[in-house]
Amino acid sequence: MLTRAEVFAWLDAKPSATSGRPFGPEVVVYKIGGKMFAIVADEEPPHFTLKCDPVLAEVLRGQYAAITPGYHTDKRHWISITQDADLPDAEIVRLIDHAYDQVRGKLTRAARAALEAAERAAAEG
Image (tube, rainbow, N blue to C red):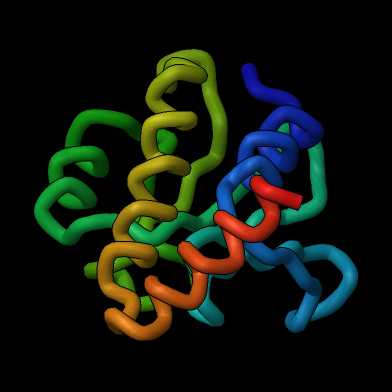
């Protein structure tokens, strides 16, 4: 199973992603362009909530007992994950990537352009 440190490392590696604790010290929220894509409880094993395509979310909830409707979020567009032995680490990583891509892809053209410019500047400097 992925550790909390591994989950945080994967999320921290996302280009232009930021993190903060707007809901208190026990929860870390990850955003891209000011929009949330992941909420991670600061506990071991990690429990987290991810943005998800509604159709995929429904399929995943039927496939894995560890995946439930998003906790304190829009149940259609978010999933909550409590790690267990039946949920492969590769699937969790894929879902983190999916959450990031879902939100980044729906940012305005101007917001995406600003992020891309900042990423290019960071890569050059």
